[in-house]
Amino acid sequence: MAETLISVPPRARRGEIVEIKTLVSHAMETGYRRSQLGERIPRDIIRLFVCTYNGTEVFRAELHPAIAANPFITFSTVATESGTLAFHWTGDNGFSVRETAEIRVD
Amino acid sequence: MRRLAAVLGALALAGSAFAAEIPRAERRSGYDLMSPETRAMQDDDTANPGMLSVLEGAALWSRKAGAAGRSCADCHGDARASMKGVAARHPSLDAARGRPVSVEQRINACRVERQQAPALAYESRELLALSAYVARQSRGLPIEIATDARTQPFLDAGRALWERRQGQLNLACRNCHDDNWGRRLAGSVIPQAHPTGYPLYRLEWQTLGSLQRRLRNCLVGMRAEPYEYGDPALVDLELYLMWRAGGMLMDAPAVRP
Image (cartoon, rainbow over all chains, first blue to last red; front, top):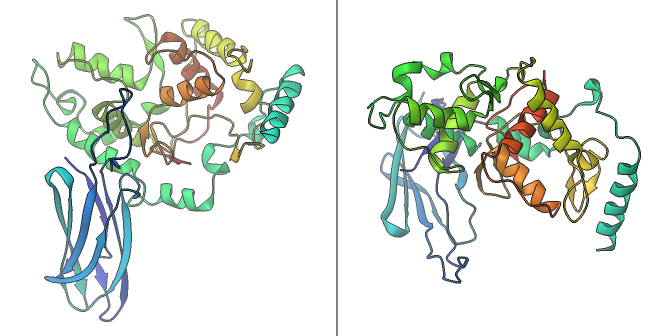
């Protein structure tokens, strides 16, 4: 179970640049650490984060082992029309979390 | 290395003089001493990673568990009302055990006795989530530890532990946190050790952790033998620290460097 926290301004003017903040819970195990018995702890990270705005991709990030646990990603986009922002995190061990947020553009 | 030796020398010197308690007007929480960037991270509920655990704790609060098939909410109702100020009053006296218990122990007592479920392990994801959810309901409220004749011996034991030198470095808690707060140990500011925001998200840990984890960390840093989680000595020290921070405002779940 992964928790997410998303901040999207509920209303915006057309053409306005809006800031979007996302936080997702994930341990982000690098794959480089070893256990006390010397065994390599298998990698378990989020590989890809994609945000789409009414179906159009507006932001994409590839994540790597150096990313902190519970990655916090903020980015901006231009408010073009009312609709849905969809967020999708995918990673190792079948990790897949989807979340959506509504935005109203006047 | 030389700088570290100098700092330790200074600590030893300062420790030899009579250590005074910090006057109320000069008390600073870890929040006051940290960088503006980390403060901004704590203040924004969508940037504070501790809030992820609070969300998880809210879900656990209403999930039925154990043989009794009851959830926390079945007895306590809406935590936003029933748990308000609870974390600011803990550790508090448990009449049945005859000694103060921490928030974590109180949650586990409820689990075992009321829900008839196995106790949650210390620092487990679930226990941290539940304690974070409970502590969140005290945000902005002053710490208020009730003391009376029954709790006084435990408060005194906590104070004695605070003042006792131990470990290979022969340091007491107060040598750093009463006498040398605000100065630096290696690159980090020495805080006054007011536990206003536990469980808190330490950026160094990359996870939420309890006050006892923090205390064990300090003991290891002093090269002393750390107490086990749930050890009465750690709860006494928690009690003393919370009493010492009386009147300061809770900011759980806090973010600390």
